[in-house]
Length: 385
Image (cartoon, rainbow, N blue to C red; front, side, top):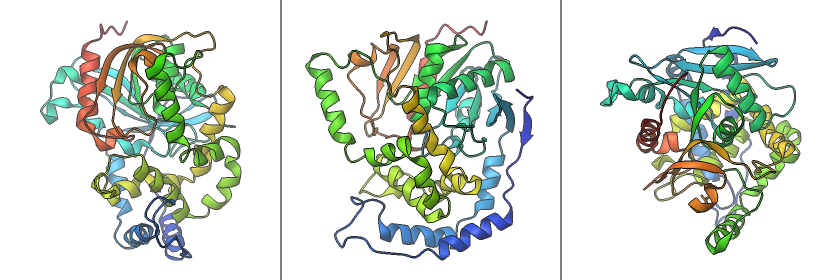
């Protein structure tokens, strides 16, 4: 473990030129004549997207936006871990670690961090301020690769070390969606310094399975819904290295792989991905994967979870006993179970059914997510020890 060292993103111009040349030279091909997005990422949209990428997108502007926060790197268990550490306003900001997922990155939280750390600058109350820690998952973005695939349980161990040993917090709160929801679950389950968790996805499963008609109906519908989603998940959980050979040489391939998920997992209007995200937001997230050459190592987390035992939280049927806030967004890819099922896995103290939003809640509905986090933390008997 090493002391944190400041980190500033400064992408070599040669890297940007290489990406631009590869996108321009991409050999466009065919799609079915009746194709929208049902066959995968729409070809016409990809052409438009890549035209913007090479002719209008300003990476240097986005790079400056990323650099406006305080970034650091440290080594934990031999892996370089990158993180943003934005200290909150007021006399007692509460430590909050927010974990992203796949195919996301810290970019999901760029417009979210200041709202949490400095609420008084946005019409909020200074008493709601957080010390915000936003790490790049091992193998993702600006963090280094683990020596072999790590799942969310191992990543939780690393993030607990980050919060307690590197940053010196005696206790903290964890929040996350996608893989961040799984990481937060493991933090709350296994690490005593984690005092509470807030999740906007439920990825974990109870050993006894669903009980009663409502839970059984949810489980059956869940499996039906996942049939057309399981392709990428199975590939990345079994043979991620094979996929990497095509992706690592193709910025357009990476963009299409990620855009399909941004489109399919979000709460869109008129089937238009840009009804929720701008091209700049989409491209900034994609570029983090491309410039860091981490598409390959980021996919390893699926393999790592399979080795850790999949979605099962506890073979003994134990649950996360720290207070747990659950934010249910209606277009979440992994549909939430009935509360009765969630309460066998978590000590649910807050359950909020949102009016809008999907999988990438921090980008899609930041106002709803932030207010739910604040409400949850206000309900805690907070004591940093």
